[in-house]
Image 1 (tube, one colour):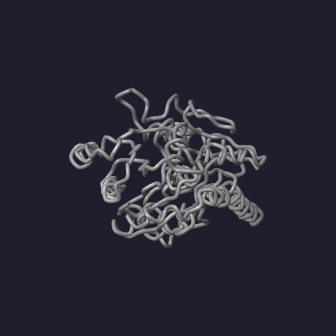
Image 2 (cartoon, helix red, strand yellow):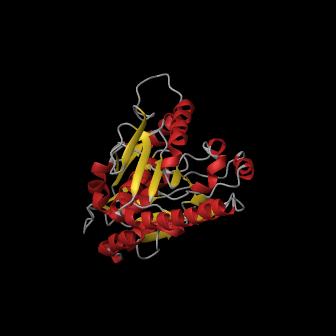
Image 3 (cartoon, helix red, strand yellow):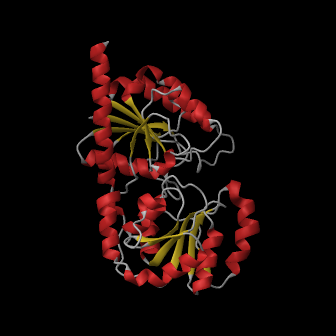
Length: 350
């Protein structure tokens, strides 16, 4: 099958440091190629991929040092190039939210659109009512709740290249927090949990400009706790050591997380996840097998005490079964085949 993958341009594919959507796109492209398909990736020029690369910007937007840049202009140029080459592909798979809808109305039946973000925003329902012809993919069933009547074609949980992560048989006594410093990710909860149980906490996290005040006022003062080490932002090359060395990943979120890629990164490294019961958590963490699902600090502290009951090798096996890149790619291939059959049927009727 000839497949176009259209990535956002905010991060490299895969990201050099923090980044979720572009990381998933990278693993999906490589897995589809591994399964024998002809894949073209429309992304920034520094992408590393087994697919054919169609570079549409010299550099990903976030790490571009230029002070004057337009993410809208960059994505419009990208979509124009995809449109120009659309006849080359059986399926066009967009990861760019809804920006492509007006450009591809006449070929919506050849598209798949994965929505990677939260959907509880006031302007979104109107968009999906205006363009109902585009088949949509959710990354968890929970993500769909704000838009139950949208044109959902499938739910496909994220996957990652199993070979990228080295599982560790034993933790080294610390707890880990990985991702982004923001109010909804609740690093303050992670610090409170670690402090309560007397465990070292290592925080590897990005601080966005939008969250700088929150970091300065709410989190930085907590970093003086002798149990807490702030590592900063890390890339894939350091995650096996960081997550594999942790007794558990703390995922104390306070928002409807659409998926939570860091949870399966931890599982890939053999580390269990202690996660608050929000958003997609129940679709990702199997309570008592790959981690523990909790509702408050008391339950989280109790879960830390139960960590020795979990089998880290079993956690890695469940990652491979449910969340490998190939497992994700096979689910998308089933969807692509359905989309193609529908497009072919429409062509015959016409």
